[in-house]
Image (tube, rainbow, N blue to C red; front, side, top):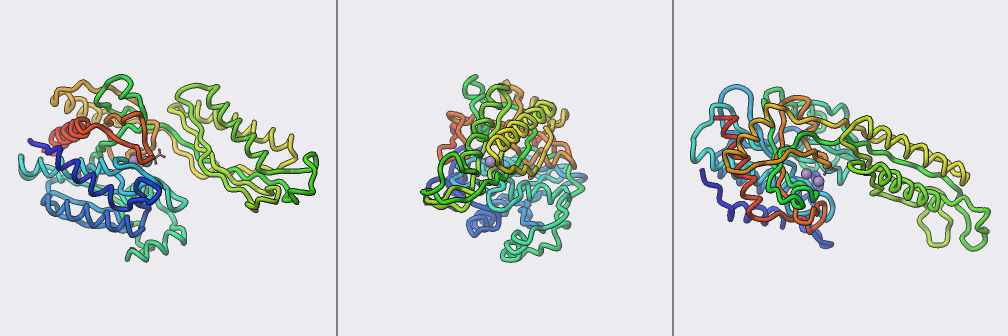
Length: 396
Ligand code: HGY
Ligand code: MN
Ligand code: MN
């Protein structure tokens, strides 16, 4: 079964030009026009590959080769972060459809239905949501935020029909993704089978001080919400550092109000992303952050409100799928390592409804979520070959 490495690279290049961001990289947020163009492009490729396509109630795009029983599904997300790279999500879609196309050509109709999915959203880069596509597939979206509902209507989707996207007939979901870190590159390993995906907590902290005149308010009389937040942000970093790997904590969004050059900031809202592969350790990390931020607030006479935006436990990949991936790698002549994913993936959501597994290929310099994101051509090809072999073992 032949996988054409040039075709893989061409398709990845083509997708990357859709939503090209003037500041670098690509930006294809959910339901944007770039997102719609990318979906159309993938739909064309799926049709050309001989798959029957359809879009579900939230805009996930499916391509299907008929078979009996529950489906074997591969794919990834079509959306990107701002200034996103060429491969995050895109690789899983392009590799999935190219692998299925090659399988259909070489082996004909599969025994089981074989599907490729372009999941509409995973990154949370536009709305206050993430894993929108996979949560719809698992039937776990209870309500639609009005802002998302309006964007859905603009794309001809009916927000009252979100429940129709739920699937009960998926047997296995397998996804090829870039590692997005430097573990594989630094150990000189070309491929990993993911054992588990880390647990994540997203917190939003609101620090309340008092807005005052920047010229007339002496330093000792201020209740500056931004300097308080700065001390908290430093604390977040040092707590995570002191716990050591694999604990990580990131402040990725900060907003100061009233955001004026000559006003002492009266309010600051910032987010913290806290991750660890062990649930207990993740909770302990979060507790230390909460407690130290509360101490800093009280020392500075500031108000502090902490809201949990989302909390997801670590999710193990299914042992059957790991075994299939191990065999597929061996059949392709590579010895894959097992590793925990520090990044979140749709597989962790889909695990609630079906067996899931993931393959990682190395990221050059460990870079991701930035325009420098890259993977060697030979690794893209290898990952796709192993994915194709795994799909063959599962569906034929
Ligand atoms: O945040 C994550 O880990 C994922 O890339 N969205
Ligand atoms: Mn990502
Ligand atoms: Mn991704």
